[in-house]
Image 1 (cartoon, helix red, strand yellow):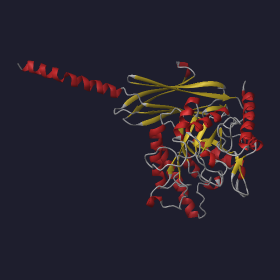
Image 2: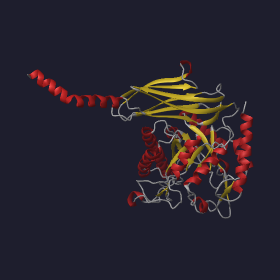
Image 3: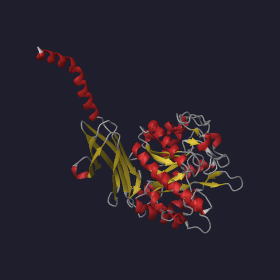
Image 4: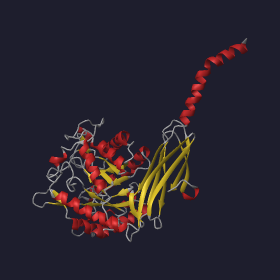
Length: 471
């Protein structure tokens, strides 16, 4: 009798037992979040090491044992670049990194990532073209900043009236024009507009009053521009064209790396990645606040300089590990100017341990008594070599109107001089595309007529460099 009751009980519980087994199997088989990043992306010379990063995040609630394999061009044993095993607890993220010399790798290639776990295999691949060259630089502008509204009404006098009217479709059109010039990296200047400066605000007390360029739930006030979600438009169009977008996490306040700024950046980076991280073109995180090459945030008193420098180091020491848990393969970029690099001393060793790409600017206007542009670049390259940080040039493609202070396109001859003269950078990106370059076929011209002439002059130059690079 008891035996019969046990059978009946087992029969009654059978659906629940099988459901539990099925659910457990599904949890163990949940594919992880997988990402593949090449630093630098798209095109490099064979004097540059290719940094390959395979990021994996366990999104299940069970531990996972994962096999991670990187291949060169084909999935076969002889083409394995690196094979690793990752043991990740629930929610944990990690990445496999390979820094590969490219001397003998001239040509077009594919990096293939395969991640295998219990019941699944996930693949990603990225293209890379390697040129034979005597220098590290391709001597081309590989990308550009864009701003959805220029921060200064004076500097952006010839830009802002048109920029604020741009629709999502016109931002897509601009992305296509950048691709036409071979500018395959887009750096979004900022995701919020807030014209404050470090040490001159009281946001910790009064709250953040900045306005978003996207539909943020954290801070819902929006900038008064026509585009509904220009970040989504740029990323979506970049997806279609195989481009790479560094998403600007800012603006909190210029040169502000305080604890309040850090916590704000972590919240915004998380929201941006949750909203836009599914885009293939989401390449990394750019910290918009900029700063001095001396890392003292323009302070003049020694005690305040030391305080600001420590804030910068602490900021990146916390921010980078935070975003690595969001997206482990995605680089973090910092863009100070090149002024006072020598005064920062050994601080750069601590900073660059937590920065993947440093993209300094203004070497063509170094202050009197400072290092020369080439000397500052050489010093930064030394720091970068020792910390495995990538050195990119932020080329200023504009000039200042001395009388009225607005920005206008720089002559092509001066841009070419910098491309030739500063040939140590593995990638060159410029500030900026809107208001400096304009496709003559664009539906809206942002900036003065000279922007069209620069577009045409640079395209002619870039085409000639492309032709010369072909074997």
